[in-house]
Amino acid sequence: MKIKEIIAEIEKIAPPDTALSYDNPGLLVGDDEKECTGVLVTVDATKDALSEAKKNGCNMILSHHPIIFTPRKNFLPGDYKCDVIAEAYLSGTAIYAAHTNMDAYKENMAVRVLKESGVKNVTTLFENGFGAQGDVNMRFSEIRKKFQNILDDGSVFTVGDESRVIKRIAMVNGAGGDDECFTKAKQVADLYVSSEFRHHILLEAKETNYALMSVGHYASEKSFNDIVYDILKCHFDTLKLVKYYEGNPFND
Image (cartoon, rainbow, N blue to C red; front, side, top):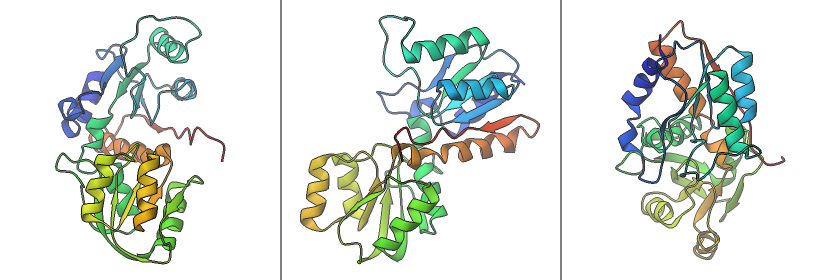
């Protein structure tokens, strides 16, 4: 099968036109007319991911984050992203990204994490499909431990009284620590989980005793690999699929 056939299946559930305006999903490197020898699924198209793709005979990398995000004025050696792109192109490895269009998928990463955590009645948080929300009846401290274990994340920290019982939880995978997401979460839940919180939001949560839990950006989105793997495995049972977990970029 050709690379473009793989792309077509992903775009059925995550159409590029559902991505946010600032985003850059789609085929970023390579030729989609080539026969696909295998797909490596990863959150980021890194040098190590490219090496892993080569080692496993995969000529397509399907990443969550686009390696090309903003327009470039030059393409020079020694630039990390340029080096990855050049190596991928010269080796015949295509790089495709499904970013905020995958975040808008009804079974997005936040939905998957909440379901894996035992949260009930899980639905998306925003009308456009982003985030997740659901019912829970558990102490805040117990939820923290559960998320740490499920996400394998040593970066978790909380704001608010950990002894309180949480009834409703909201989550946005990735960098959801902004005013829009925080405001939405407060309307529907008594605990909000995301990453990269702004200082003033952490302060407001502390002053109002609202429960927040911060997890690592990567950790909140590593289930991207499982989601894409399941989609492709369902449609291409003979396709070689490799899940690559690069881990959090910071020291544990």
